[in-house]
Image 1 (cartoon, rainbow, N blue to C red):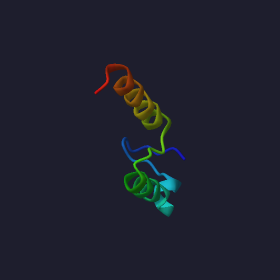
Image 2: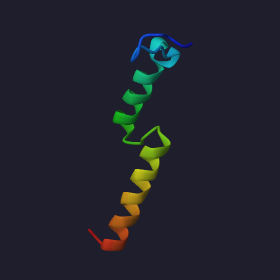
Image 3: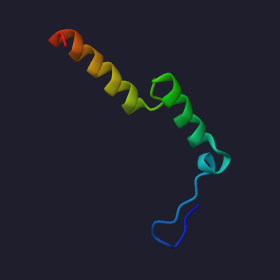
Length: 53
């Protein structure tokens, strides 16, 4: 759905509360739900093992 007003968008995921649910699960479990978040978490774990901190 395209709108003529800049910055005004609609997200069905936000409308039904899916985004908020995913954020809540991520905070409680400590496991990210996004691809970038998972890559960042794995990368930091590998670096910690290599550096030993």
